[in-house]
Length: 613
Image (cartoon, rainbow, N blue to C red; front, side, top):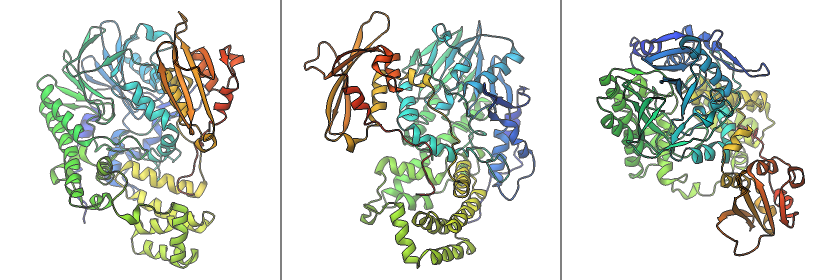
């Protein structure tokens, strides 16, 4: 099938990406306190050249757009800093200062973005912060704009459920997600025509200090209005769309609409390749449709937390309608085909977008893709299993690989057969066969190099930036081994933002169940508020290898083996390896129970292998 693309002579996106330019950060490099480069937008200067053979021309075009860097005026009183992290920081001027929307990933890039704004607009204090949703690139840099202590006088607005979902994504499954994110975002790949070009949603991810200040104002309903520093804001709650907790909002006096990450200039992910809770494409389309009607006639420009704005009310309606139809079509056609008996893999091969959507630049699969999004819709409704008994209890990769290699006639024969598939242009099966060989014989350097070459070729041909990064990072690790390049989510302030139940859950997911099968213990944590001494009692029960907990109101019905009375900071100290004696924790009962419980904790390896056993 010959691929058709929208017309490259249409420069509307480039015109909009450059519109309102005020000034850029020169050089476009941000360093941390130790001088380590945590963001380098200048590394993408090569994108101004012609598209090489090592890149898909559509992705090259998108990468050029995402590499724009600087401060831009969206409309009077509304500015965006783009190109200083994966996401945009938006700044809305109020009566006394400026409201910051989505303070990037790292405190260092957020501080640089705010400094760039102040350089051109004056030294205005931050008088409000808004998190549009619960993903780390929209809150992690908050301490770069809101120093310690400043939050006492600055409202922080977020959609209801923000903290819970921010924790579940960044803490509970954080190690695995962070490891896979290194592949998705191409962390460690060179910024080059044969390396990382961006991620489709932006240029890349900064690698600085992550922070989190809990919200002080929950947005809990559509139609809720708040005034921050004299600026009126009208909210639309959109849970379950691009994030479990997310919201759009209107600045009626500026006639400007913020679309969070619900509508950007790409087909987004229904399920990201790094892993996440599967999103609901049906409800996503519903809320985009609701936004069209709810905000109709009240804006002249719409902007999002990624990419560039869209100006003109009718243009925004057309854009939102296309984005709405994109997710609705993927949802409905996947359901139609699965109800006809097709599996996820089969649906991904059959489904294609209507020409009107396929020929819209904003609907191209730079970040999400039709292929893996249709699989995600299938997973949401039917799960991982396709109904075929042969797939119910398959061997894991290493054992399966050994059997495939044996069937092929041994390692040398399997490698020779894979090379035939490469020569015939069937790279997909060559990758499958070589992957089996590598998992059966991980020390086979010839097989690893052959697989790396296949991954590299697949990456160079991918229109989707995250597919490209996965393929190229896979090739890199086959050749060089696992590197430690990844975002550090262990900043103590992340832990400080967690509630006590969340902290206990973070212990529970580290318990080595089999080692704890035969143990049983009960520990009460009476966590005081640090001022009145009053505290909530949380009962931890280890039973059958599972650590569960509940909050107890009033005197406990049965005694605990150990009761600890402590402040939250002391609890964090215990989790970090301190002892009750060192931290001055009051104890009642058997003090040996706590180290006994903690002896079952494990520490995951954040550099676990992916492309090898």
